[in-house]
Image (tube, rainbow, N blue to C red; front, top):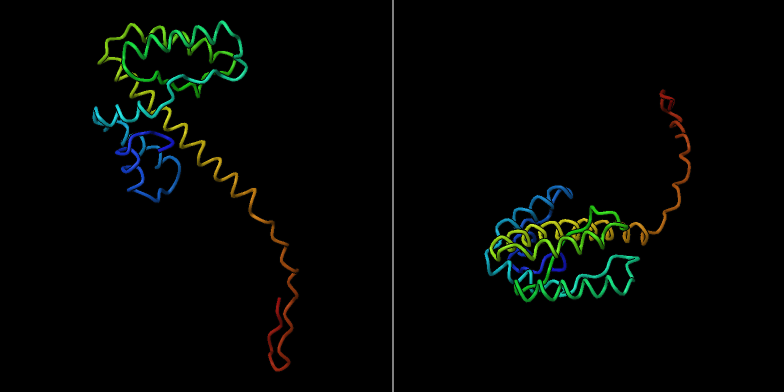
Length: 167
């Protein structure tokens, strides 16, 4: 549910566990996202934060004001939070991309925007799943105590009645 706020999506992804690898998990997550019914998409959008966080380093007041105004206009027009996946955007370009996208998407008709928002949710869920698994793997690696190396093996001594000598 922290990756996508649709219970239907979460149940579909969880129902097929365990997954052999990340690619299989992401494929199942994509399939579940593509199959979201309108009510499921509404539920997922309602679970998203109303105001997208400013990207790191974007502490400029004018940018924050512009983002708040654009977000309010978007919510007023479409009735849900603005969602966008910026995983592949360099940090230095994230704020510009965010503002440009929200302003550009304000021109969409509501049906077209729901399709765009659904795709952005799918991409967000993929990134969140990937980070969640990476973080869990890192946490497991950090909390696993190092085992001491096993003692060096001693050559076996032949049984005194045995004609065989270990090699």
